[in-house]
Length: 78
Image (cartoon, rainbow, N blue to C red; front, side, top):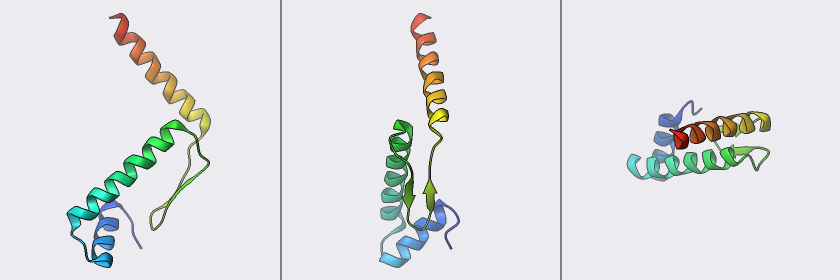
């Protein structure tokens, strides 16, 4: 079973006969993509095979976005 990002990369590199660097680029992109989707909050769950299912509490997304907006406003007034 895959337990972390490094294990996932090694597993996929071996399974598909690719270099670790090639797989690392793909996996990094996938996590970046999932992160962007989660930040938007426009989903119910995101499933990554061999890694898990991810979801976000919509109230938490709103709270984090409000914090970011507050920090931006503070910088612009300084």
